[in-house]
Amino acid sequence: MRIKQLFDELGSDFLSLVMQTFDQIDDLVFVMSFNGNDYEYIYANKAAKETVRLPDLSNHVTMRSMVSEHAYISLRKHYDQARLSMEKTRFKMPIEHKGQHYIGESLLTPIYMEKLDIHFIMAIVRDITEHEHSLQHLKEAQRQIDEERLRLESLIELNNEAIFQVDTHGHIIKCNPEAKSFLKATAGELEGSNLSDWFRESFFEEWFTTEPKPKKTSRHELWVTRVHQEEAHYIKVKFIPIFIAEQQQGWYLLVRDATAETNLQHELQRMAFIDHLSGLPNRRAFDDKMDYLLQQTAGTGDLLAIFLIDGYRFKDINDTFGHDAGDAVIQETAKRIQRVLRDHDIVARFGGDEFAVIIPQIKDIETIEEVARRILIQFEEPFSYQDYSIPIRIGMGGAYFPGTAKNKNQLLKEADYALYEIKEASGVGFQLYKKMPIDQ
Image (tube, rainbow, N blue to C red; front, side, top):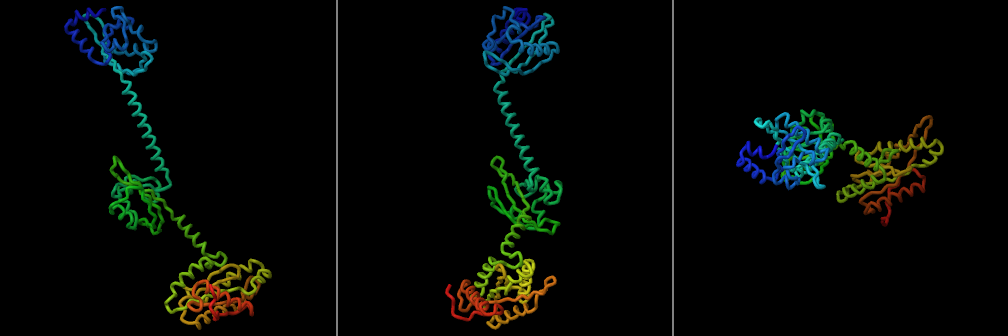
């Protein structure tokens, strides 16, 4: 079959017009006839001739002669499908030409000329290499986005912090399992509600209604009480703004319940100022409190007294009855001193058998001496420990402010001097400093 027969059948003018039209397009256009054994090229447009460099088609150029065996098997399958089904067939396949690799998309249109009893296949082949590469890049980008989304969802879902996604008004869009556990609510109850409705405090309501808001991550710490609950929780909240196309769409709220660690910090701070054996404030706490009370006393007309107290022969008690007994005596001493003091008076343990007392808001020296007398009375009875009756005796030195002392250091030195005089005498009793000022 030759092109001449097509000219005779379709008309030379019409067929020439079609061929001229095909020569103007960039796609490769082939017309193939089936000779019962293979497909033979009977027409190729200008682009096809330049690209594939077909030989003279009058020499019965077949498909098998122009492509590799692998490519022929694939092409033959598609061409046969179009010819036998008489339906258009579209397919993609890689093409190698002159060492270059392309991706071609072919549209096969079967044509049957009943009068001539000949099957033709018109093939239009388009180079979609750039398109396919772009598509692959797009798919890879989408894959990376999907992976990042899954990682983010996993990070949110498995995070041990409560995470809320809210709009700019505070309405909950989404939350993770930890958020549901923190508020003791289901996703259905939370999503769509306003976050501020779940807390008794006004913090969240004020946050979402106050303008302007920060454009960067904002951190806050506060005590909150959840609705329908009595227990307060100390939370650390991180507000992370959500921007899409430079427009703020809402916030991610990361809420961490820091109640346990906060209570632990407070307990550690408290323990740093407490003597563990006696349960009394230690020297550090005593100094801080004394500085404060001296400032409060100055200019009021009141007196502030301090007593420094030493146990009398407490070492002998340890040696005679053992360290457990010695510890019990320390604890009993603390209790006996506290019995006669007011709630706002301070008793502290400096260590060993040394104690100190601060007595603010005293009107006169006689009251100082009366308090000292009542403390000494507490030690007239022996201490019963197991099967033992242990006498506990103390010596006290006192000083007061304002008096000859002008500051804390002078006041402590005066009380220490008075205690020294007691220890040099009998070691038991009370002495109030009433001598000349002691230099700082």
